[in-house]
Length: 358
Image (cartoon, rainbow, N blue to C red; front, top):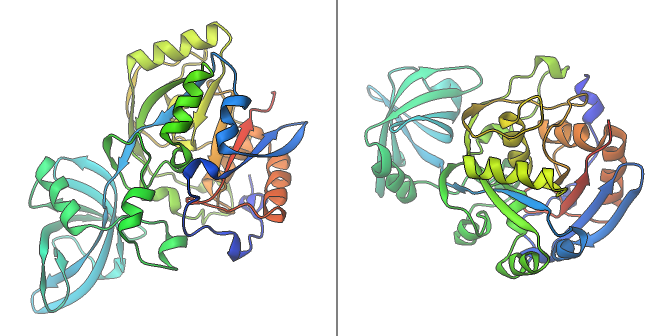
């Protein structure tokens, strides 16, 4: 499909730079194909969902994966930045480097430094490979939990570019850019639909008989990359790693059999469920990497509903929601959201989409 079919104009003032407070006070746009839209708020979820429905959350935890440092090559020194996006071994990460032209295989990079001094945090790496588009494979001098600890000392929260271009990250972001149920460290981008949930909302959902299950997909920074191709067939997705436990797969299949609806909280949960599902629609226990790219025409096997924030024009995420609820439905919903003052992107408001009948 032509990528320009997924374009729209978004006024810059619609981009949220901070989340709603409290989290569940964010607005929620109900989108049901053939029935229009309705304006609600996130804390209305217990009255919107039914007893026996199952919310599926992504429990990944964001690492401070934005690194700044210097590259030394002989006497030549250059300042560089790295955004880690996928772990490939206990001591190795794929990263997007800026500026990419300053990096070559064999380079040593010293993170936690600037050109003149060394900060308390220090983390060194070697460039093993240089790929396309500024991507590089880094091998760090420490490994496993020692590397994770070093990242917490040196790294910054990797705010999306549309926020980071307007302000620096701060201590608030270490809490705001993390779901309350995050537990499996490894993401470099938050599963932002889940940022709206609070302990009070969980209690209200429990009282309404709505179940919740957890899967893990470690979101990579590739989620923020624009689609540069003119046709979706020419776009390459970056892989992300994840897990669907056997107990969760069984619970979801049982819920479907008794008439419960599966509600994916976030596009990452949905992509993971679709990666784990067979042609018969049954969810299997699953672990590995997925680069599933969902565009209109895709036949969904798992979720009946999708809770998700508002996405960038021409992005793979807007393509996914258009596949789920219909392109014209989503274009109309986004036009309403812009006109009605909804806040967009990671710290913005949310939507609850019903899957279109196929």
